[in-house]
Image (tube, rainbow, N blue to C red; front, side, top):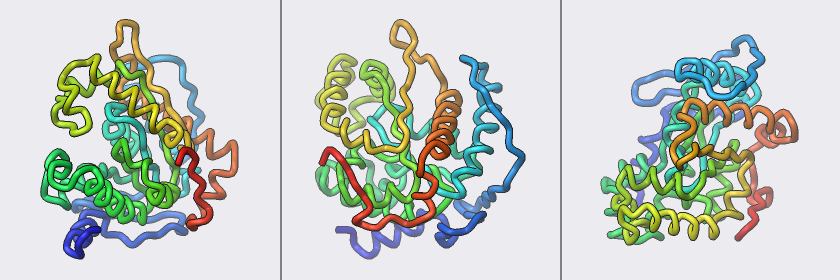
Length: 277
């Protein structure tokens, strides 16, 4: 359980605006920057394969205007295995929407004044998960945010109460692609891959093992976005392209079913149904 001083640190890391779940528009301040979403003209966007970087940014921005309208201020929570690019894609989505971006791992390190490997070493995974839940609870109280979460955040039932304050987007990718990314960033810096070292095959095997355990939990997400892998195992898309596809999927999901009506109300404990637990 977090101390009162740690909880205060979490709150200080969150936006300074009051939560405003039922307002049409709101202004949120973070790190001395004010972001205000306005309603712009709507544009129809069609995706026709790969685009150059600048064009992809424009497509994501156009899609963002439409998605911001249907989201009506609700936040987005990105979940998925490590290496799926939740932070890089989340930043692009936030820019397109005119939203603030948060990474729960970054906030956790700021609150604990330790790196995540140091938290695992000091308090174990359970200690880390307790801080993670507290951070998520604080961030989820705010509107107009894109929140990149840790890969294991779906493992706690209570976290789903907070995730359901918005739209949950799960990024899914081939184990080999994710392993290459993790090794390139330094697998030894990730506590759950410490034993695998920088062996791509060993990291991919660990990813498959962890995904098998979490797959049913990830399936509770509102939207799933599959990462595409080029021939030879390399990257096929950049974060702008993935963000554009994700935004288009979110818009379709909200318009196709009752997701928008769910977003108008704060979930209660009995409303949250999580399979795989």
